[in-house]
Length: 199
Image (tube, rainbow, N blue to C red; front, side, top):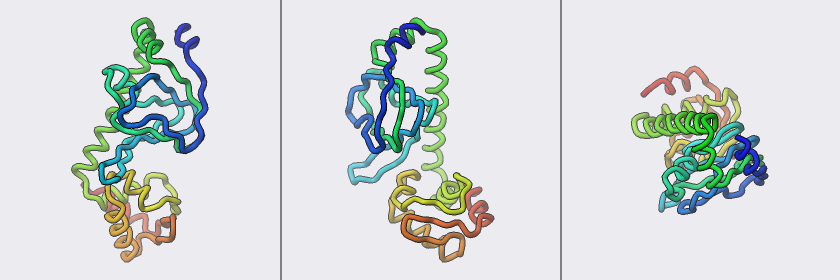
């Protein structure tokens, strides 16, 4: 672990900075200490799909995968807020994986947990109805007033903005939510929970 600590650099990233691009070579391992990095894929038509967020104490499953396989990034990572992280160069990462059982266990536990999350997301996108997924997303933070756009919801759910807007409008007609610019207010939590339980 001593060689790991000697080779780790503390880096600060401002909100909005691109951490990696599709097609980039992976040259370092990043362990986020503070802040959040969102990882997403974008289709040729420009549609976004949020894969996961890397928050305090987490590492990026794509970084780990690309370092282990030698492949380039298939998605992009963007700092959602100011980020403080340890950056470990690829050669130091390989050295520590080989020499440190503690570091190897840490890396693979994080990798396995995040991979399970991504598989869960893919199952949700493939098999769950959009109204159920939308209801779960609205209820996830436990707040009655959500400050987010239809586009942000669409990216999180892997859907099109038009589809999300149509379903939100229907929720509003039912009296479940109230919509205003950049804000969704939840009015009938019981109804949303009932829809969220559908598969």
